[in-house]
Image (cartoon, rainbow, N blue to C red; front, side, top):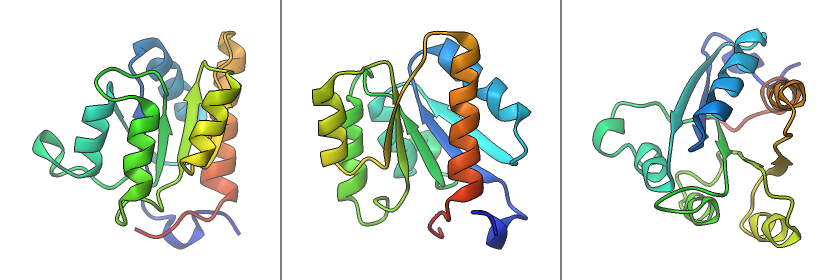
Length: 150
């Protein structure tokens, strides 16, 4: 049984909150090589992420994500601020949030887990390692884990 068996007819909705276009491109590339159908959306700052999640403004017609990939160092509203708002919102709190960041700082790790992040992954610097990390996220979160229903 896979994590998407009940809803395998629809693609998995992924939202990446990332201000680095290079990291977005690499993530898209890694997901294209994967076997899981997905709709990949991205926003570049924390304020946009919350507007997307609350379906405000230009995001009114967007689907609710099944998985969020969240960077910590974002403009307008930081990753921890976004995470706190997601986990405080009864309509959003069950969406798994994967922290995907360059920070290896212990205080960042502790802070995000205290805010109920679902996991914390440090972005590797090397291209091949970055692609492997994204593939492992896809393999675990979209194949092994049972995601909550919408």
